[in-house]
Length: 165
Image (tube, rainbow, N blue to C red):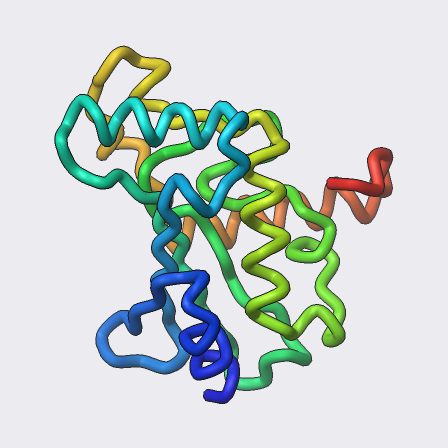
């Protein structure tokens, strides 16, 4: 898949294949992928400091056979993030909900997702819950798929009020 090679060559994102499948990627984002003034970056730095480990945001991307003509299923696999624009790991972004084939540049999509997460008020739930375990609320492929279906129905009916999200 040429998109994988392109993303890996830039060095901006750490990408791994899930079960050696070219159609399922795990993208690891560290705090430096986000605006240093964002709440998400600060949460990640605080968790990294308290645990003596680098904390990351892990995205899972499932590509359909007919990508880019059909949308990928992209969701935040871990840690659990909270925001008024994140539902069961699904991101309420117009480019992910109302997919168009011209959005098929994966690297550009990841850059936009990093910017979106930094500006959407996303927070790490574990920080907000004072260190509680967030494993019980981790997003799954199915929960994200259902969330995107709900977001699609909502925005088909109501439109997109804020064109920046």
